[in-house]
Image 1 (spheres, rainbow, N blue to C red):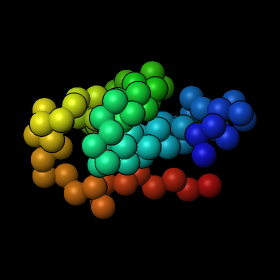
Image 2: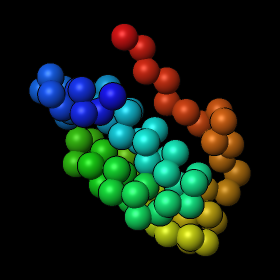
Image 3: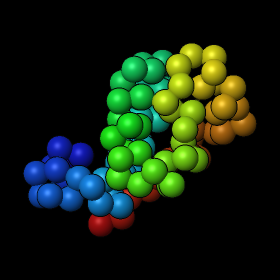
Image 4: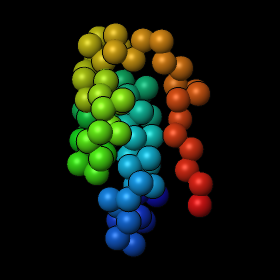
Length: 82
């Protein structure tokens, strides 16, 4: 989905930010921390202030786990409406 947004010139939009954060969260939950960090960094370039809430995605392993403690990934999805 993000590549499609980039192709339309909307990769840096609010929708692009939401998609990147969701991709990053997915990789984080799969313990693919370097992939999570890569997508989080792209999101942070779009809107650093909004990305702060998800800064744990830039951390690896136990550091990020402590930061994410108390978050329920099932309810922490950013929904995207067309």
